[in-house]
Length: 201
Image (cartoon, rainbow, N blue to C red; front, side, top):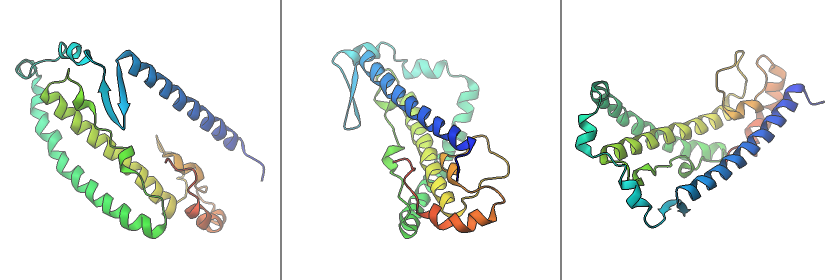
């Protein structure tokens, strides 16, 4: 079967994505040199003296609270009340993946790749800002982790494209069969369920 225009476009897109990843890595290396820190086994290490300079930019807790906007203060309990739901979801999905992905022979998503909680080590943040950053790092990491798990689940159980495109479909939908193509669905379902070479590792 000849390649379609869409296949050609997707090939170019993947090549561009690889270039973007390389450029992002290069820029991150530049930023590490600029702000004088390194990564050692996933831990940030600042060069001597940098923390002292960063401390000059810290806002004390009382000054931070004094200048806090009322709309921020009144919504904080609502924001943090969601943590209970996120933790329950996190635990439930962990059990789901460990049990079901093993049974379905779906490669498991590496949790550590998605939970990058490191901003609390920045000395220019006060204690309240550090707590906020831990919360944001956890929740956004969890959502990325859940999206990858749900994408792999959809690929296994429902690899059919929608009739109408969603604003930001996950990358695995490229492998799905077209909406309405019953013949392709029946012929390719087993193959799609067994093909995992294009997942994020």
